[in-house]
Each structure stands twice: as C-alpha cells, then as structure tokens.
Image 1: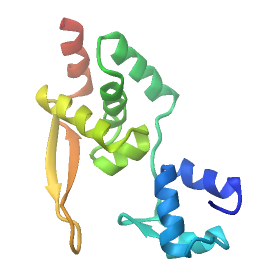
Image 2 (image 1 turned 60 degrees about the horizontal axis):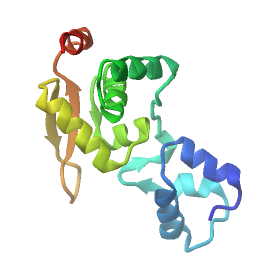
Image 3 (image 1 turned 120 degrees about the vertical axis):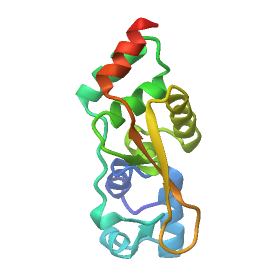
Image 4 (image 1 turned 90 degrees about the horizontal axis):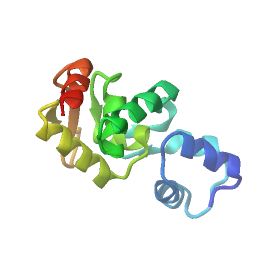
Length: 153
C-alpha cells in the first residue's frame, strides 16, 4: 500500500480505483513507494500523465439531473453517464469510468443503451503506438430533446 492514507486519497480523488493504484505501486516502485511526487513524475498509467490529470467529477447539479432522469424511468448508470455527457463535448470510456465512477462493463452497457436510442455518436481513435483504438462518445441530440423523449414515454 501507499505510505500514508493521504497519498492514497489523492489518487482515489483523481479517479483511480484501488486496483489501479496497486498496479501503479507495484509497477513503478518495486513494491515500496518512497515519495508520492516520484509517482507523479514517473507515472504514465494507461496513457494518462498524472501531472496533467484533470478529470471532471459529477457535481451537485449533475446529481440533481441524474435524479430527474431516474424519476423519468432511466437506469441509474445511464442517467449518470448522460448527466456527465450533457456538459462534455466528447468523452472516452476511460474518462466516463473515472468521472462517473462506474466499472468499465457498466460504462459499455450504458453507452450501448444510449446508442440504441440514437442519442450518441461513437467514433474510434487510434492511440499512438500499439494497442486497441479507444472510443470517443459525444451527444448526437440536444439534452432538451432527450428529456422531451423521456417525458413522452
């Protein structure tokens, strides 16, 4: 584990899960972390430079929107994802996972449901180097139109 709970909290607030923190810890520090800034300097986890990590979290307004969407009959995970997407021009699965605090399968299921309703665009972008391309999502229709469709149902 990390030296102090405060160091772990910093990474958790940045959107990293416990398993991701352990992976960083093991991979970059040979089972012993000496000083958290060293982790920031040396870490590029899944292509995200931790120095420049700026992840928008759901705020109170987003939570109110989520509650309203749930009251209109929407699934909680889909509602949280949609609340995040209404403020973002575009988002990757990883950004959604960290911002909305869902697991990867939950993000995929939520995005599939939004895609079935034809509310989002999905495109793939190749990462530099090896690896699978990542998906970038954006809203296809306006948020007010989505609300109107939900109210009709």
